[in-house]
Image (cartoon, helix red, strand yellow):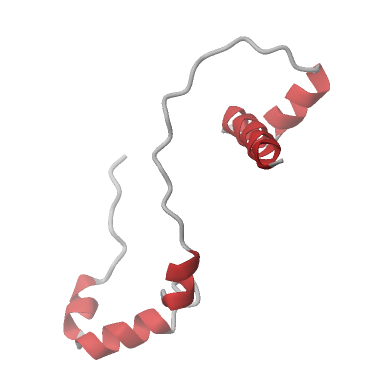
Length: 90
């Protein structure tokens, strides 16, 4: 299925640069990026290729993750990564 733009490009083209900026600033889903954001930002490296493994998990643990929906294996990986990162700091 091809993504179809829902943007009214004629409306966008009819606005001045200042009006577009004002629209962007008033959008609650699009807060401006300020110095504080840039000071706290961190560079994230692209993920390394994952390795397929066989892992024995308690059935209730696996079922709980599966019930979280699509991406449950990625979620398990994220939990293990968070644990690893905390342990490396200590």
